[in-house]
Image 1 (tube, one colour):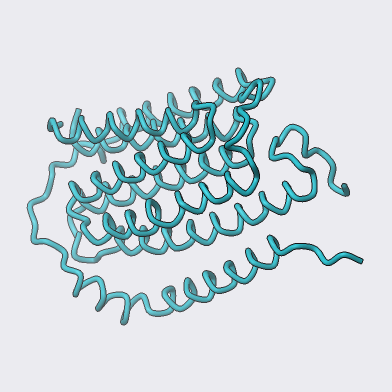
Image 2 (cartoon, chains in turn green, cyan):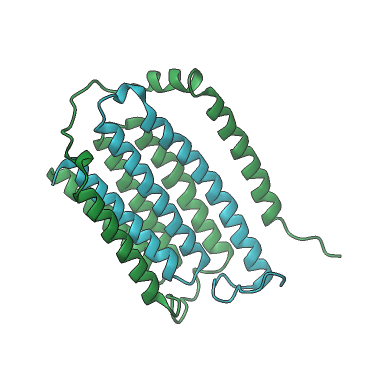
Length: 164
Length: 103
């Protein structure tokens, strides 16, 4: 439990709470970008450099900006609604609290979480690339196909309907 | 609290914040943001378990997270396209008002 972990954890939690509670949708999207950047810092601290930079590229660079675009296209950034939470928000909060209680109980009583930090060599990008091109080449092709299909599908769904 | 337990608790908190937001907010875009936070909590769990495992040279955790990030990017693109299509049809992104299947 180091100081850096506590700082990163506080940053992630504060930014995600802000992303879920702020009234202005653009502010929510920017708080989400901060939370994603904090998660990238957590990955770097866990020695997963490649994943950390992929997180910054994909989430901070693409997903957060895509959400800002969607907010502006749907005019959600203009007028804050009267009530941002739905009518029965208490039940949702209760369900989330129960889920957290269950997860925390499971983590606290699990023998797996007592593991010490293993000291080991760094994982290089070369190793990851080798694994992607040999052992994981089929999932890589499938994910490429999935991304292509998702891109075409997103364009077709968001395309303007033809006037009949 | 051990280091791994710290990361697991952080991930659980992140998941529950996302779950609470997805269940309680009215705007469909915020619901999607909550789902993204839940996906990221799962990714943090994968990386934490990979880092504390004995056989980290197998790269399983890292590979799972890389593919998970790819799937999440596809999900975000399609989800936001759906929200834009719904907005064009109903003129709202409030999920409480989008309540008919054949509008």
